[in-house]
Image (cartoon, rainbow, N blue to C red; front, side, top):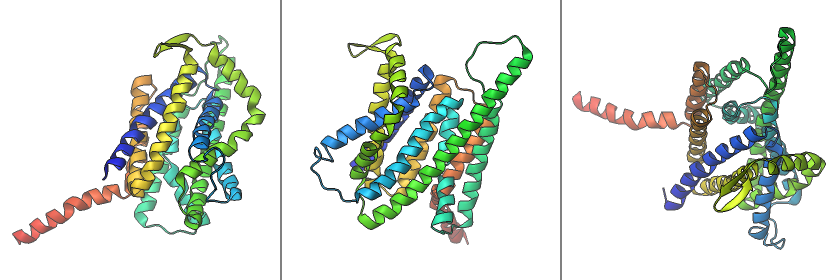
Length: 339
């Protein structure tokens, strides 16, 4: 592994893990701020890309504009859906576990659209991931509630709990939808790059620039949450006095840019197995940090579900098999020598 790859892996952990922390701080301050956070992320990366990759609008494209429109539709839909889910009583740990099921969605799309066939062990891995997500989802559904005043009327309280549960179910539906849209985007990208060549930085730039117009209808929502952000208590950061939520948003956007850039560099320097493993381990570290630092509820059922998701992921990426294979030949050789 070269220095560039090692640095990219380090930046994935630093950038992506810290990004999850700042996103959780943002949504804890304002649960409906996910849309604003996504918009600012797109605006930041598009602005940087316009100055670097786009060379202020003068650089030619390697991939046709129509293809980018399709890619953007997938990317924007999955990004907005994932962040909107926080509006529906979805906790950060459950959100991260659910998104760890991307392998399951990718396999389903591969079988359905590309007619791919996989070895039995891959199907076992997908079953484990699906079971893990299902367990975490069921366990989380038993403690669904939205912040509100306590009602003395028991009947009224039960009605409100049922309404909270319905909103949570809608959040799960949104996460499921986003998962399969993201998987479909991956298949589309695979066919796109095989036809026109790999241009990751150009794709990163256009997939963040073109969707900016989609936020025009949500302008009142963005303005409302910007106003809420500016009204939060002031804090000091590097000698500057900023509203607390504004600081969280700035740190979220900055670390998101670092995270995405590191992942794109990693894809050019390492094999896909290394990239998948790095991203999976990063999610696991982020999950543990979220549980410990933010004291999110995490029961035995959550741990069982999480273990199934990540062991299933390791089996799917063949890391577990390769690790075992490293020791098996040595044992076989020793056995032969004894004989």
